[in-house]
Image 1: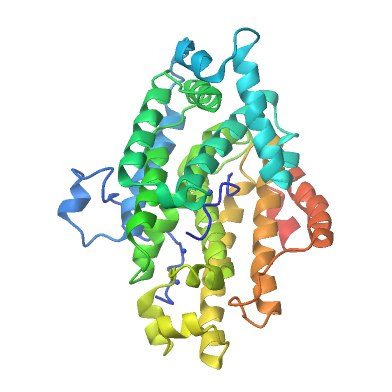
Image 2: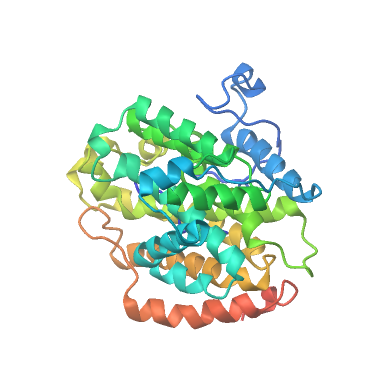
Length: 388
């Protein structure tokens, strides 16, 4: 797959149409091929993916408004200690430390940004990042060829166990502790696993509606997992739902950017994460993707895809400013760096077949202080700042 973007924390593959809001107007019900087979949406498949996903957004936002539940519990360490071979010491501190090490190795810029967060929030974000990365590695890592639907079933059972305080290893223990402290629901985690199932059985997407659901599964979910940990600014006047909407939009934007960046790489694996109907409207087909030749038709098609991704980024920006001050910098940094990948695709004359778009180290370093400045601006000051 084109890379689950676990850095899309608001932190984790376009019908040339996008509504003025990427979430649609009828926010009714969510449907998942496996996870919610009994939901009402299955009985009414005419609902769009945007409508289906929005029900999940509403449920997650409602958890934040509920009185804080007393869900602290003693973790079942017996199995964890046996698996890890650890006999003494502060096991929970060690678990979080290991998560931090993984984040520092694989998401250096994001890890740097987390240093501004409170220690508790920082550790919780590390735990979520590591679980998302491990889930991604199941179908996109070195052992991906050996992963079966049964293996994903076992991974989902393990997820349920850790939510119930029965972690299997140290990384699980860190997440188990995190979800006991914050209003984090299991549904987005299950939905991410559903995205892994899609990658085992699906390599084409007929429309953007189908692709939207996939992008929610593998990246939009990260935003929903992360908002409760990031926290909202006390001075924010935005609704909780709007902040979750922005978190979802950032995950979608990042994943669409992954897809556009990785067209050539995915094609070499026999995958096309581009809406088939939109390719046809542009006079293109899979064979054009596999030939990898930049034509005027391809440029026109790519311009539409990039425009859509940027509109999701614009939607996401509305919510970053509403997060707690200490949580904004890593999110702004992630957002700004990913938007620059789209600039790089354009600079490469839309050749995402043979050239990999990336943001150079110098540009990254220049972006960090700008992201920091935006992070320090309160919700009421951001609009002026980003339009200067």
